[in-house]
Image 1 (cartoon, each protein chain N blue to C red):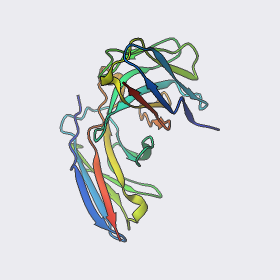
Image 2 (image 1 turned 60 degrees about the vertical axis):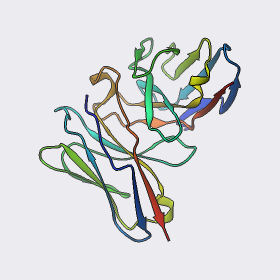
Image 3 (image 1 turned 90 degrees about the vertical axis):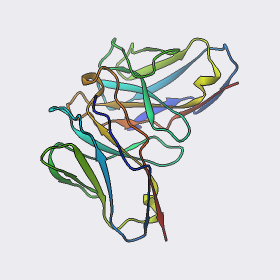
Image 4 (image 1 turned 135 degrees about the horizontal axis):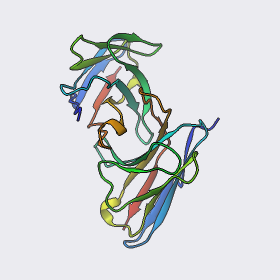
Length: 112
Length: 113
């Protein structure tokens, strides 16, 4: 079971780069790492996914070291609208006996 | 393309009543999931399905039943609601790939009195 550990909360200011790190020491060989964003009263939304090294899309970058025991979500130049909870998810339900775990996530607060 | 939709959006039940939550997706996804989210907590997987006619237990399956009679629909049933089942329920779906990017519905807020 690839349990994940993230900081409970983080604060930032508009225009800054924010890095959120997730630890997943028990990640399996086949596991992908996926990050989701959730706003209050909404379902989570996919941000980015990766397997190793670096992945970049229009909203974020994901850095994964060679041992894959952690990953870092990087949000460039955050704005107030990036205030949300960010979840790191490792693996898939059917590979883990149905115990896919989102964890408590990281509550990011962006201030003006 | 509506994505993932959930019915109803809100519901209030009395202890012991039953109800069914409906999840529908129009993306032809193989996999579907039901989660619950309690205040200040992450999502916990209740049940999931890897294809039409199949279901499996997640982390917190007790008190819930599910059915996947059609590929596009995933139903979550509460046979005898309890106050501990007061929560927000999210449905999600994904392609049958190893990456498993999940697409979530807007949620159903359920209160059991």
